[in-house]
Image (cartoon, rainbow, N blue to C red; front, side):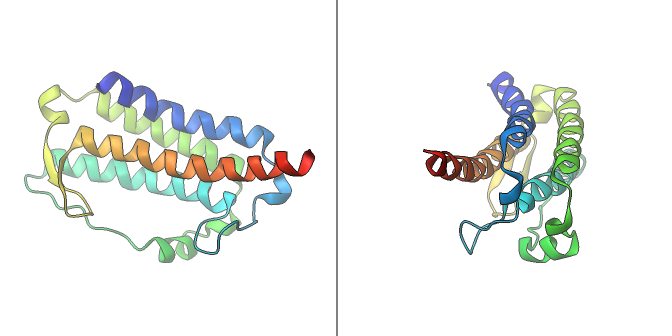
Length: 157
């Protein structure tokens, strides 16, 4: 199972980089849904929270009974200036940070991968399950990015 988790973690930033090659730059700041990020904000968000994910996993390994605190997504958008970020640079940041996350995970023993902690949701999970949540988070935002491309394709026809 961990082989697939690691492969999926590696694939997320690569898929985003590929999407950006064909992404319409004039739509980076378009908001398809009032309650969701723009494409630019998605890329900045993923790069930003990758560091948070790795920090949580490191603390889970180092601290018995660690409880990961949630963070305020809306505040982070403003504090970290997501709307002003260069998406191509942020995609590189995401890939670099993800390599650090993968390096950390690959160095863990199976016992360490199953070290439990309390996720921000309040669930008792282990590190490998948290890594799966990171993959799910990637997919949530990748799906949103593909909505722009689907809309773009519909306009071209």
